[in-house]
Image 1 (cartoon, rainbow, N blue to C red):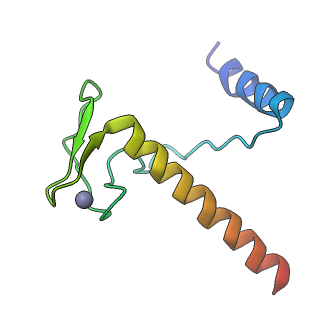
Image 2 (image 1 turned 45 degrees about the horizontal axis):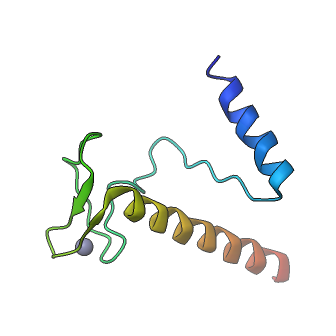
Image 3 (image 1 turned 180 degrees about the vertical axis):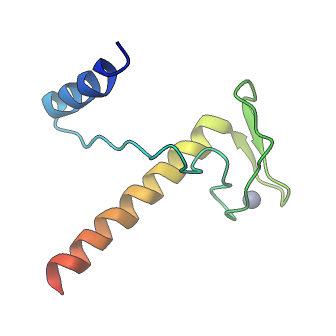
Length: 85
Ligand SMILES: [Zn+2]
């Protein structure tokens, strides 16, 4: 059952023409502050607001989405660098 979910996501993304980005299980995209990069180790699944020790306060899912987008951009730039060089 759980093995079908990534396959279904992949098929759906292909049909929509969008890139599927699955972070590895050790990726800290949901625990890192998207503004300063500091980690919040005690962030719980039920927490809805991300509060950084340096002052950033925002929706937890938005914070994770920004971190994923940053990771995607970095990955994309690395592919371009490897393609050129
Ligand atoms: Zn921060």
